[in-house]
Amino acid sequence: MKLLSACFSVLLLLPLQVQAWSNHSLGSSLALAPLQGMAAETLRVESLERFLEAEEEGLRVLLDEQERFARAQFEEYPSRPDELRWQAGAADRRSAFLQALRINPETRLALFIQAVPGVAPGQRERLDAGAVTVYRKLSLWSEWRFFKVGEGELLSPLAVLSSAADEPDYGHDINLFSDNPGTAGARYNFGTQPFGDARFEYSSQAPFHIGYYHEDPLVFAAGPFLRRTYPQWRSYQYIGLARFAFERGHPYWGYRFLGWGLHYIQDMTQPYHASVLPGSTTTGLLWTAAKALGGFPADKQAAMARVATRHTEVEKYQLQWLRGEMASGDSQRSLLKAYAEAANDGRYPPFDYRYLRDTVALESHQRADQFDGLIGQWLEQQPAVGDFRQGNQLTAARPDAQLQQLIIELIGHFGAHTRNAVRATAPR
Image (cartoon, rainbow, N blue to C red; front, side, top):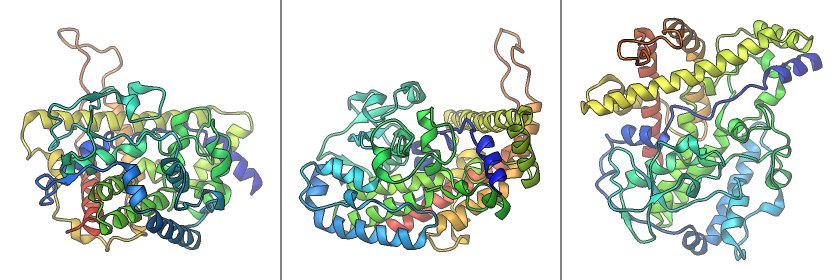
Protein backbone atom coordinates (compact mmCIF):
# COMPACT_ATOMS: atom_id res chain seq x y z
CA MET A 1 0.00 0.00 0.00
CA LYS A 2 2.92 2.38 0.64
CA LEU A 3 4.06 1.79 -2.93
CA LEU A 4 0.60 2.68 -4.26
CA SER A 5 0.56 5.84 -2.19
CA ALA A 6 3.95 6.81 -3.55
CA CYS A 7 2.67 6.20 -7.08
CA PHE A 8 -0.27 8.49 -6.49
CA SER A 9 2.03 11.18 -5.13
CA VAL A 10 3.88 11.16 -8.43
CA LEU A 11 0.70 11.34 -10.50
CA LEU A 12 -1.05 14.05 -8.50
CA LEU A 13 1.50 16.76 -9.28
CA LEU A 14 -1.03 18.02 -11.81
CA PRO A 15 -1.17 21.59 -13.13
CA LEU A 16 -4.50 22.11 -11.35
CA GLN A 17 -6.75 24.78 -12.77
CA VAL A 18 -8.29 27.61 -10.75
CA GLN A 19 -11.41 28.19 -12.80
CA ALA A 20 -14.77 26.48 -12.34
CA TRP A 21 -17.22 27.86 -14.88
CA SER A 22 -15.07 30.99 -15.12
CA ASN A 23 -16.58 34.03 -13.39
CA HIS A 24 -18.78 33.10 -10.41
CA SER A 25 -20.24 36.61 -10.26
CA LEU A 26 -21.54 36.37 -13.80
CA GLY A 27 -23.01 32.91 -13.24
CA SER A 28 -24.58 33.89 -9.92
CA SER A 29 -26.29 36.97 -11.34
CA LEU A 30 -27.87 34.86 -14.09
CA ALA A 31 -28.85 32.04 -11.71
CA LEU A 32 -30.47 34.39 -9.19
CA ALA A 33 -32.53 36.37 -11.70
CA PRO A 34 -35.68 34.25 -11.00
CA LEU A 35 -35.64 35.09 -7.27
CA GLN A 36 -37.92 38.02 -6.52
CA GLY A 37 -36.45 41.03 -4.76
CA MET A 38 -32.78 40.21 -5.37
CA ALA A 39 -32.32 43.15 -7.74
CA ALA A 40 -35.10 45.47 -6.55
CA GLU A 41 -34.50 45.63 -2.78
CA THR A 42 -31.68 47.57 -1.17
CA LEU A 43 -29.33 47.20 1.80
CA ARG A 44 -26.67 49.43 3.29
CA VAL A 45 -22.95 48.74 2.89
CA GLU A 46 -21.17 48.12 6.21
CA SER A 47 -17.46 47.92 6.91
CA LEU A 48 -16.03 44.70 8.29
CA GLU A 49 -14.66 46.55 11.31
CA ARG A 50 -18.10 47.88 12.24
CA PHE A 51 -19.62 44.39 11.93
CA LEU A 52 -16.87 42.79 14.03
CA GLU A 53 -17.08 45.43 16.74
CA ALA A 54 -20.86 45.11 17.02
CA GLU A 55 -20.93 41.30 17.13
CA GLU A 56 -17.62 40.25 18.65
CA GLU A 57 -19.11 38.25 21.53
CA GLY A 58 -21.70 36.53 19.35
CA LEU A 59 -18.99 35.64 16.85
CA ARG A 60 -16.97 34.00 19.60
CA VAL A 61 -19.90 31.71 20.39
CA LEU A 62 -20.62 30.98 16.71
CA LEU A 63 -17.05 30.21 15.70
CA ASP A 64 -16.53 27.98 18.73
CA GLU A 65 -19.72 26.09 17.85
CA GLN A 66 -18.58 25.72 14.25
CA GLU A 67 -15.22 24.37 15.39
CA ARG A 68 -16.82 21.74 17.61
CA PHE A 69 -19.16 20.71 14.81
CA ALA A 70 -16.37 20.47 12.23
CA ARG A 71 -14.25 18.26 14.48
CA ALA A 72 -17.21 15.92 14.98
CA GLN A 73 -18.64 15.82 11.45
CA PHE A 74 -15.96 16.43 8.80
CA GLU A 75 -13.54 13.66 7.90
CA GLU A 76 -9.86 14.61 7.84
CA TYR A 77 -10.67 17.99 9.38
CA PRO A 78 -7.51 19.61 10.82
CA SER A 79 -8.48 21.24 14.10
CA ARG A 80 -8.06 24.96 14.47
CA PRO A 81 -5.21 25.76 16.88
CA ASP A 82 -6.47 27.31 20.10
CA GLU A 83 -4.21 30.31 19.63
CA LEU A 84 -6.29 31.31 16.57
CA ARG A 85 -9.60 31.26 18.44
CA TRP A 86 -11.63 34.45 18.04
CA GLN A 87 -11.62 36.50 21.22
CA ALA A 88 -13.62 39.63 21.98
CA GLY A 89 -11.53 42.77 22.34
CA ALA A 90 -8.76 41.93 19.85
CA ALA A 91 -6.50 44.88 19.11
CA ASP A 92 -6.67 44.22 15.37
CA ARG A 93 -10.12 42.72 14.80
CA ARG A 94 -9.73 42.28 11.04
CA SER A 95 -6.50 40.30 11.35
CA ALA A 96 -7.87 38.23 14.24
CA PHE A 97 -11.01 37.40 12.24
CA LEU A 98 -9.07 36.28 9.15
CA GLN A 99 -6.89 34.05 11.31
CA ALA A 100 -9.86 32.61 13.21
CA LEU A 101 -11.35 31.61 9.83
CA ARG A 102 -7.94 30.40 8.67
CA ILE A 103 -7.95 32.27 5.39
CA ASN A 104 -5.05 34.13 3.83
CA PRO A 105 -4.12 36.95 6.26
CA GLU A 106 -3.51 39.30 3.32
CA THR A 107 -7.06 38.89 1.97
CA ARG A 108 -8.18 42.32 0.75
CA LEU A 109 -11.92 42.38 1.64
CA ALA A 110 -12.34 45.64 -0.22
CA LEU A 111 -15.79 47.25 -0.44
CA PHE A 112 -16.54 46.69 -4.13
CA ILE A 113 -18.97 45.37 -6.69
CA GLN A 114 -18.32 43.62 -9.95
CA ALA A 115 -20.13 44.77 -13.09
CA VAL A 116 -22.38 41.89 -14.17
CA PRO A 117 -25.94 41.59 -15.53
CA GLY A 118 -28.36 43.29 -13.14
CA VAL A 119 -25.58 45.27 -11.42
CA ALA A 120 -24.95 48.75 -12.86
CA PRO A 121 -21.64 50.35 -11.76
CA GLY A 122 -23.01 53.87 -12.21
CA GLN A 123 -20.40 56.60 -11.73
CA ARG A 124 -18.25 54.63 -9.30
CA GLU A 125 -14.46 54.58 -9.37
CA ARG A 126 -12.92 51.66 -11.26
CA LEU A 127 -10.64 49.49 -9.11
CA ASP A 128 -7.49 47.72 -10.22
CA ALA A 129 -7.57 43.96 -9.67
CA GLY A 130 -4.82 44.39 -7.09
CA ALA A 131 -7.34 46.12 -4.81
CA VAL A 132 -9.45 42.96 -4.52
CA THR A 133 -7.04 40.06 -4.99
CA VAL A 134 -3.80 39.05 -3.30
CA TYR A 135 -2.44 37.34 -6.40
CA ARG A 136 0.65 38.80 -8.01
CA LYS A 137 -0.35 37.79 -11.56
CA LEU A 138 -3.24 40.20 -12.19
CA SER A 139 -3.74 39.30 -15.86
CA LEU A 140 -6.08 36.50 -14.73
CA TRP A 141 -8.64 39.22 -13.92
CA SER A 142 -7.96 41.54 -16.86
CA GLU A 143 -11.50 41.11 -18.20
CA TRP A 144 -13.37 41.48 -14.89
CA ARG A 145 -14.51 44.99 -13.94
CA PHE A 146 -14.39 46.00 -10.27
CA PHE A 147 -15.86 49.22 -8.83
CA LYS A 148 -15.40 50.88 -5.46
CA VAL A 149 -18.32 51.33 -3.06
CA GLY A 150 -18.39 53.24 0.19
CA GLU A 151 -19.76 52.45 3.61
CA GLY A 152 -23.37 53.56 3.89
CA GLU A 153 -24.14 53.22 0.16
CA LEU A 154 -27.28 51.39 -0.86
CA LEU A 155 -26.87 48.27 -3.00
CA SER A 156 -29.13 45.45 -4.09
CA PRO A 157 -28.73 41.98 -2.56
CA LEU A 158 -27.92 40.79 -6.11
CA ALA A 159 -24.99 43.21 -6.40
CA VAL A 160 -23.49 42.15 -3.06
CA LEU A 161 -24.13 38.42 -3.40
CA SER A 162 -23.04 37.97 -7.01
CA SER A 163 -19.90 40.07 -6.51
CA ALA A 164 -18.97 38.08 -3.39
CA ALA A 165 -19.48 34.72 -5.10
CA ASP A 166 -16.25 35.21 -7.08
CA GLU A 167 -14.23 36.41 -4.08
CA PRO A 168 -12.81 33.12 -2.75
CA ASP A 169 -10.83 32.90 -6.02
CA TYR A 170 -9.06 36.16 -5.15
CA GLY A 171 -6.71 34.49 -2.69
CA HIS A 172 -8.74 33.41 0.36
CA ASP A 173 -7.25 29.92 0.19
CA ILE A 174 -3.73 30.34 -1.14
CA ASN A 175 -0.55 29.73 0.86
CA LEU A 176 -2.29 28.08 3.82
CA PHE A 177 -0.16 24.91 3.94
CA SER A 178 3.07 24.51 5.85
CA ASP A 179 5.18 24.11 2.68
CA ASN A 180 3.74 27.25 1.04
CA PRO A 181 5.32 30.72 1.15
CA GLY A 182 4.43 33.05 4.00
CA THR A 183 3.79 32.57 7.70
CA ALA A 184 0.16 31.41 7.76
CA GLY A 185 0.89 27.81 6.81
CA ALA A 186 3.08 27.31 9.86
CA ARG A 187 0.24 28.41 12.16
CA TYR A 188 -2.97 27.13 10.53
CA ASN A 189 -2.47 23.36 11.06
CA PHE A 190 -3.38 22.23 7.53
CA GLY A 191 -0.07 20.38 7.19
CA THR A 192 1.75 20.10 3.89
CA GLN A 193 -0.12 20.68 0.64
CA PRO A 194 -1.76 17.31 -0.13
CA PHE A 195 -1.64 17.57 -3.93
CA GLY A 196 -0.88 20.00 -6.69
CA ASP A 197 2.47 21.69 -7.27
CA ALA A 198 3.29 23.85 -4.23
CA ARG A 199 5.60 26.03 -6.34
CA PHE A 200 2.61 27.76 -7.98
CA GLU A 201 0.47 29.98 -5.76
CA TYR A 202 -2.83 29.30 -7.53
CA SER A 203 -2.30 25.57 -7.00
CA SER A 204 -2.34 25.91 -3.23
CA GLN A 205 -6.06 26.75 -3.22
CA ALA A 206 -6.98 23.52 -5.02
CA PRO A 207 -7.63 21.36 -1.90
CA PHE A 208 -10.18 23.95 -0.74
CA HIS A 209 -11.99 24.17 -4.09
CA ILE A 210 -11.86 20.52 -5.16
CA GLY A 211 -13.74 17.76 -3.35
CA TYR A 212 -12.76 14.13 -3.88
CA TYR A 213 -15.63 12.58 -1.94
CA HIS A 214 -16.82 9.74 -4.16
CA GLU A 215 -13.78 7.88 -5.48
CA ASP A 216 -13.27 4.12 -5.44
CA PRO A 217 -12.17 3.04 -1.92
CA LEU A 218 -8.99 1.63 -3.49
CA VAL A 219 -8.11 5.12 -4.71
CA PHE A 220 -8.41 6.49 -1.17
CA ALA A 221 -6.48 3.52 0.23
CA ALA A 222 -3.67 4.17 -2.23
CA GLY A 223 -3.74 7.93 -1.82
CA PRO A 224 -5.18 8.82 1.62
CA PHE A 225 -4.11 12.44 1.13
CA LEU A 226 -6.90 12.72 -1.46
CA ARG A 227 -9.35 12.89 1.45
CA ARG A 228 -7.80 16.17 2.55
CA THR A 229 -10.17 18.39 0.61
CA TYR A 230 -12.18 21.15 2.26
CA PRO A 231 -14.94 22.75 0.13
CA GLN A 232 -17.67 21.22 2.32
CA TRP A 233 -16.14 22.76 5.43
CA ARG A 234 -15.54 26.15 3.81
CA SER A 235 -19.13 26.36 2.56
CA TYR A 236 -20.48 25.32 5.98
CA GLN A 237 -18.29 27.92 7.66
CA TYR A 238 -19.36 30.83 5.45
CA ILE A 239 -23.05 29.96 5.25
CA GLY A 240 -23.11 29.75 9.05
CA LEU A 241 -21.62 33.25 9.17
CA ALA A 242 -24.24 34.44 6.68
CA ARG A 243 -27.10 33.16 8.82
CA PHE A 244 -25.57 34.78 11.89
CA ALA A 245 -25.23 38.13 10.09
CA PHE A 246 -28.81 38.05 8.85
CA GLU A 247 -30.15 37.17 12.31
CA ARG A 248 -28.16 39.99 13.94
CA GLY A 249 -29.31 42.65 11.46
CA HIS A 250 -26.26 42.91 9.17
CA PRO A 251 -27.70 42.12 5.71
CA TYR A 252 -24.65 43.39 3.81
CA TRP A 253 -22.38 40.85 5.50
CA GLY A 254 -25.13 38.24 5.36
CA TYR A 255 -25.17 38.39 1.58
CA ARG A 256 -21.41 38.75 1.29
CA PHE A 257 -20.71 35.69 3.44
CA LEU A 258 -23.42 33.80 1.57
CA GLY A 259 -21.68 34.63 -1.72
CA TRP A 260 -18.47 33.15 -0.33
CA GLY A 261 -20.28 29.98 0.66
CA LEU A 262 -21.93 29.70 -2.78
CA HIS A 263 -18.53 29.74 -4.45
CA TYR A 264 -17.58 26.28 -3.20
CA ILE A 265 -20.98 24.80 -4.07
CA GLN A 266 -20.68 26.21 -7.58
CA ASP A 267 -17.13 24.87 -7.92
CA MET A 268 -18.42 21.38 -7.25
CA THR A 269 -20.83 21.52 -10.21
CA GLN A 270 -17.71 21.24 -12.42
CA PRO A 271 -16.94 17.51 -12.87
CA TYR A 272 -13.18 18.14 -12.92
CA HIS A 273 -13.52 19.41 -9.33
CA ALA A 274 -15.23 16.21 -8.17
CA SER A 275 -13.11 13.47 -9.75
CA VAL A 276 -9.39 12.72 -9.41
CA LEU A 277 -8.75 11.84 -13.05
CA PRO A 278 -11.90 11.67 -15.22
CA GLY A 279 -11.69 9.18 -18.04
CA SER A 280 -9.31 6.83 -16.20
CA THR A 281 -10.22 3.59 -14.45
CA THR A 282 -8.79 2.92 -11.01
CA THR A 283 -6.58 0.17 -12.42
CA GLY A 284 -5.38 2.36 -15.25
CA LEU A 285 -4.63 5.24 -12.95
CA LEU A 286 -2.57 3.07 -10.61
CA TRP A 287 -0.68 1.50 -13.50
CA THR A 288 0.13 4.91 -15.00
CA ALA A 289 1.43 6.16 -11.65
CA ALA A 290 3.48 3.00 -11.09
CA LYS A 291 5.16 3.29 -14.49
CA ALA A 292 6.06 6.91 -13.78
CA LEU A 293 7.60 5.91 -10.47
CA GLY A 294 9.55 3.20 -12.28
CA GLY A 295 11.13 5.65 -14.69
CA PHE A 296 8.62 5.58 -17.56
CA PRO A 297 6.75 8.89 -17.24
CA ALA A 298 5.25 9.17 -20.74
CA ASP A 299 1.75 8.00 -19.75
CA LYS A 300 1.77 10.20 -16.65
CA GLN A 301 2.75 13.24 -18.68
CA ALA A 302 0.05 12.47 -21.23
CA ALA A 303 -2.59 12.17 -18.48
CA MET A 304 -1.51 15.47 -16.95
CA ALA A 305 -1.66 17.21 -20.32
CA ARG A 306 -5.03 15.67 -21.14
CA VAL A 307 -6.73 16.80 -17.94
CA ALA A 308 -5.22 20.30 -18.01
CA THR A 309 -6.10 20.85 -21.66
CA ARG A 310 -9.65 19.51 -21.45
CA HIS A 311 -10.46 21.40 -18.27
CA THR A 312 -9.09 24.68 -19.64
CA GLU A 313 -10.54 24.39 -23.13
CA VAL A 314 -14.07 23.49 -22.07
CA GLU A 315 -14.23 26.42 -19.65
CA LYS A 316 -12.94 28.80 -22.34
CA TYR A 317 -15.54 27.42 -24.72
CA GLN A 318 -18.36 27.73 -22.18
CA LEU A 319 -17.42 31.36 -21.45
CA GLN A 320 -17.24 32.26 -25.16
CA TRP A 321 -20.58 30.57 -25.77
CA LEU A 322 -22.13 32.45 -22.84
CA ARG A 323 -20.78 35.80 -24.02
CA GLY A 324 -22.18 35.19 -27.48
CA GLU A 325 -25.63 34.48 -26.07
CA MET A 326 -25.50 37.54 -23.82
CA ALA A 327 -24.49 39.74 -26.75
CA SER A 328 -27.53 38.52 -28.69
CA GLY A 329 -29.89 40.09 -26.15
CA ASP A 330 -32.11 37.01 -26.32
CA SER A 331 -32.76 35.61 -22.84
CA GLN A 332 -34.26 32.47 -24.37
CA ARG A 333 -30.95 31.22 -25.69
CA SER A 334 -30.20 27.72 -24.37
CA LEU A 335 -27.26 28.45 -22.05
CA LEU A 336 -28.81 31.58 -20.57
CA LYS A 337 -32.01 29.64 -19.91
CA ALA A 338 -30.02 26.87 -18.21
CA TYR A 339 -28.72 29.26 -15.53
CA ALA A 340 -32.19 30.60 -14.76
CA GLU A 341 -34.38 27.50 -15.23
CA ALA A 342 -35.90 26.84 -11.80
CA ALA A 343 -38.28 24.00 -12.68
CA ASN A 344 -35.96 21.32 -11.26
CA ASP A 345 -34.86 23.12 -8.09
CA GLY A 346 -37.29 21.17 -5.94
CA ARG A 347 -36.12 17.72 -6.99
CA TYR A 348 -33.08 17.93 -4.71
CA PRO A 349 -33.00 17.09 -0.98
CA PRO A 350 -33.32 19.89 1.58
CA PHE A 351 -30.22 22.07 1.83
CA ASP A 352 -27.97 21.36 4.81
CA TYR A 353 -24.26 20.93 5.55
CA ARG A 354 -24.26 17.58 3.68
CA TYR A 355 -25.71 19.06 0.49
CA LEU A 356 -22.39 20.01 -1.15
CA ARG A 357 -20.90 16.57 -0.59
CA ASP A 358 -23.86 14.20 -0.90
CA THR A 359 -25.78 16.01 -3.64
CA VAL A 360 -23.63 18.44 -5.63
CA ALA A 361 -20.32 16.55 -5.65
CA LEU A 362 -21.97 13.19 -6.25
CA GLU A 363 -23.96 14.53 -9.19
CA SER A 364 -20.79 15.94 -10.78
CA HIS A 365 -18.72 12.84 -10.10
CA GLN A 366 -21.31 10.72 -11.87
CA ARG A 367 -20.95 12.86 -15.01
CA ALA A 368 -17.14 13.18 -14.95
CA ASP A 369 -16.16 10.33 -17.27
CA GLN A 370 -18.87 11.20 -19.80
CA PHE A 371 -17.85 14.85 -19.69
CA ASP A 372 -14.18 14.07 -20.21
CA GLY A 373 -14.95 11.74 -23.12
CA LEU A 374 -17.15 14.26 -24.91
CA ILE A 375 -14.55 16.99 -24.49
CA GLY A 376 -11.95 14.67 -26.01
CA GLN A 377 -14.17 13.95 -29.01
CA TRP A 378 -14.92 17.65 -29.42
CA LEU A 379 -11.25 18.64 -29.34
CA GLU A 380 -10.44 16.06 -32.01
CA GLN A 381 -12.93 17.80 -34.31
CA GLN A 382 -11.35 21.23 -33.94
CA PRO A 383 -9.22 22.86 -36.63
CA ALA A 384 -5.49 22.50 -36.27
CA VAL A 385 -3.61 25.42 -34.73
CA GLY A 386 -2.80 27.90 -37.46
CA ASP A 387 -5.80 26.91 -39.62
CA PHE A 388 -7.10 30.20 -41.09
CA ARG A 389 -10.24 31.06 -42.95
CA GLN A 390 -10.76 33.83 -45.47
CA GLY A 391 -9.61 37.13 -44.03
CA ASN A 392 -6.78 35.56 -42.01
CA GLN A 393 -9.03 34.93 -38.99
CA LEU A 394 -8.54 31.88 -36.79
CA THR A 395 -11.27 29.31 -37.27
CA ALA A 396 -13.76 29.38 -34.41
CA ALA A 397 -14.21 26.27 -32.29
CA ARG A 398 -16.79 23.99 -33.82
CA PRO A 399 -19.63 23.15 -31.43
CA ASP A 400 -20.56 19.59 -30.57
CA ALA A 401 -24.25 18.90 -29.92
CA GLN A 402 -23.69 16.21 -27.27
CA LEU A 403 -21.12 18.26 -25.37
CA GLN A 404 -23.31 21.34 -25.51
CA GLN A 405 -26.26 19.40 -24.12
CA LEU A 406 -24.19 18.12 -21.19
CA ILE A 407 -22.84 21.62 -20.47
CA ILE A 408 -26.44 22.89 -20.43
CA GLU A 409 -27.31 20.15 -17.92
CA LEU A 410 -24.32 20.98 -15.71
CA ILE A 411 -25.02 24.72 -15.81
CA GLY A 412 -28.60 23.87 -14.85
CA HIS A 413 -27.14 22.18 -11.76
CA PHE A 414 -25.10 25.35 -11.07
CA GLY A 415 -28.25 27.46 -11.15
CA ALA A 416 -30.42 25.09 -9.10
CA HIS A 417 -27.86 24.59 -6.33
CA THR A 418 -27.18 28.34 -6.17
CA ARG A 419 -30.86 29.13 -5.69
CA ASN A 420 -31.43 26.31 -3.21
CA ALA A 421 -28.57 27.57 -1.02
CA VAL A 422 -29.89 31.15 -1.16
CA ARG A 423 -33.47 30.10 -0.34
CA ALA A 424 -32.23 28.09 2.65
CA THR A 425 -30.03 30.90 4.01
CA ALA A 426 -31.23 34.40 3.11
CA PRO A 427 -34.30 36.10 4.59
CA ARG A 428 -37.43 35.30 2.61
